[in-house]
Amino acid sequence: MAKRVYNFSAGPGMLPEAVLKKAAEEMLDYQGSGMSVMEMSHRSKVYQSIIDGTEKALRDLMNIPANYKVLFLQGGASTQFAMIPLNLLKKSNKADYVNTGEWATKAIAEAKRYGDIKVVATSEPEVFNHLPELDPKEFRADADYFHMTTNNTIFGTSWKKYPDTKGVPLVVDMSSDILSKVVDISQFALVYAGAQKNMGPAGVTVVIIRDDMIDFSKPETPTMLKYKTHVDGASMYNTPPCYGIYIIKLVCEYLLGLGGVAAMEKINEKKAALLYDTLDGSKIFKCHVQKKEDRSIMNIPFRTPSEDLDKKFLKEAAEEGLTTLSGHRKTGGMRASIYNAMPLEGVEKLVEFIKKFDKANS
Ligand SMILES: *Cc1c(COP(=O)(O)O)cnc(C)c1O
Image (cartoon, rainbow, N blue to C red; front, top):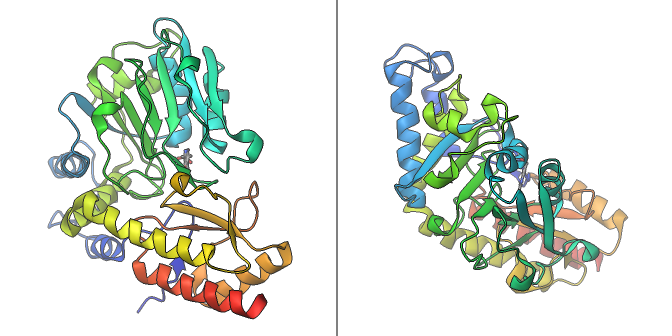
C-alpha cells in the first residue's frame, strides 16, 4: 500500500486517488491497445477517442454551449497572458484589466507589450486581501476585451459574480477554480485554465473560446499562438499534451460519477466552511482575507502572529501527514489549497490539528 499524505499544494495539486489508480491500471495496456497512452500516435483512432471523450466530458460537466470551442494547449496559463492580447486586440487595441493578485499582475504586464491596457480596479495597496470595487464608469466602452482572474490562488479571494461589461467580451483566468463550482460559461467570451490545480497534471491548458473570438490575430502572431491554428487543427495542429489530456478525461469522468460540478461544489463549500470557521474561531490564527464574501473556497491563506510559530506549525503539520502548507512569499504564513481532489477527511484532519496547535500555543 502506498503511503499518501494530505497534500495542500497550490499547484500542481492533488488528483483523486481513484483517477491515479485507474491510470496505473491502464498504464501498460490501454484498453487492449497493447500500449500506454504515452506511447500512442496522436493521429490514431484510439487516441482520437480519448481526446474526443475528454472534450465531451468537459462539455457535459461545464455545460459548455455549442458556439464555444474547447482547446487543449500547452504553455500553461502564462502563455495565455500573451495569446489573449495577440488574438483579441482587434479593433481599438484597448483592453481593461482588474488587478486582484500576482497572476493578474503578470497578465497585465504581458498585455501591455501589445496594446493600450487600463487597470480599472486594483486591491494591490492592501496586499490583495479583498476584491476591489468595480466602478463601471472606469470601463472603456470601446475596449476589445475585459480581463479578470476568477480565483486568486495566492491571496485567496474569488469573484462570486461578474460585472456587466455591456457587450465588451469578458475574458477570465479560471486556473484555480475551474470545475469547483457551477458557472454560466455563456457570460464569458474566453475562459482559460492551466490543468494542474483542478483538472489534471501540468502541461495542458484548457481554453474555452466563443466562436466570434477566433477570426483575428495580430500579423506578428506566431502560428502556435493563434487560436485559429488550434481550432482548425482541433487541438492537433502539432502533438498535443496527450497524456495530460487523458488524465483530464479520467478526472472529468470521476466528477460526472460524483454527480457533476454541483455535487462537487457542495463538498467544496463544506470543506471551506469547516476550515474558515476553525480559523476564525481560533485564538492565534488569522485569515489573510477577512471579508467573508470575498473568500475563496479553493485557496485559504492564514497565519499566526509570528514567523517562528508559523514555522513550528508547518513542521508539526508535516509530521502528521499534512504537507505543502507554507504560504506564498507575498503573504507569508500558511496556505491550505483545498482543490476538488482534497478529500473532506484531509480538511477534517487539518482542522483537528489547527485546534490542537491553537490550544497548545495560545
Ligand atoms: C497557477 C496559475 C497560473 C499560472 O499557470 P501556469 O500554467 O503555471 O502558467 C495563472 N493563473 C492562475 C490564477 C493560477 O492559479
